[in-house]
Length: 390
Picture 1: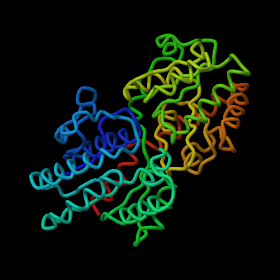
Picture 2: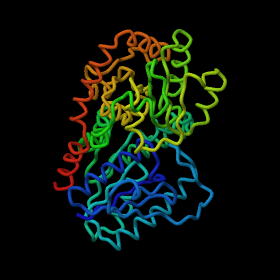
Picture 3: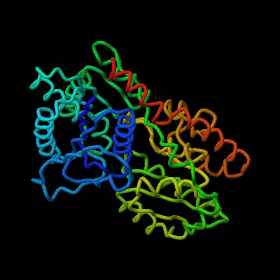
Picture 4: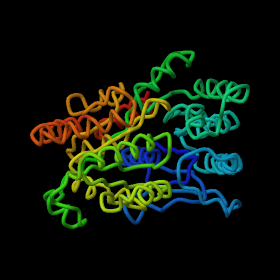
């Protein structure tokens, strides 16, 4: 089938939303579908890094000064989404896709408008929700409370009901949308991990030497967006508490935007104990994780988002320290090291506690490596294929 993917974001940037869009599209392409992605005017071209025939179409650069790649709302995105609506309308008329596959609430709204305007083409609209729109805006301090919050909640509820089919990237988000959609139907299509990226890596010690990491310390990695709603405040405070009590740890913080992490390292004189990697190239991630001993995810359940980084940690065979969330437990099972309280203190306690058992670390890493096979993109895409062929 001809599938037009709506990506209302600067595709491609090295973060979870974009990884989901990319890997889903690549998996659909492998099944024989013809994929076109409509996106913003900025973002990295991925043709030089992956073998693909996907057609990536960008809006005109009218907002040439807009260069924001990190997650989070911005009023200028309203203009970008109007331009994206125009691009999607043009591509739908020209390419006549059977499916519009819309990501995020903005993408679903754009897809719905085009579907209604071009109703004679009988296009089906698949809505892929990555999290809660209003909770995301609140978590970025873009919305407070009161009338404006209630207004956006009503918009979100309305958009949650759009589309012929709905999928969500986490169990938590599926439960919420299921209560909202009038027919109650939503399929949980989890983020996946491309296990091919982790299949031909060198021995861990070789990766550590190549990245010039200390061989006598436990390497703990955080990879992903460095924004507040990913739990970075918990992470930074936990790191400080751990290093105050022990010198046996070394931390990798890889992602963007890097400014707050740089300030944290400088203000606390931690340059000898933390490696900052910026920018983080998604395709370099396997080597970084292969050089690590533990993965950490400090995100709480506020935004109802899934955790793609946990799946990458699992693919690399790492034990994972995280909060005791439903999504995390369903991913990790016995491979997780769970902090019962959502706090930096609790995270720090778990890091110090688990470091005393190298056997337990190895055991949990092996559990996660095995469990990762259940969350490959090949498995996730089978659910989407059923929806497309319904």
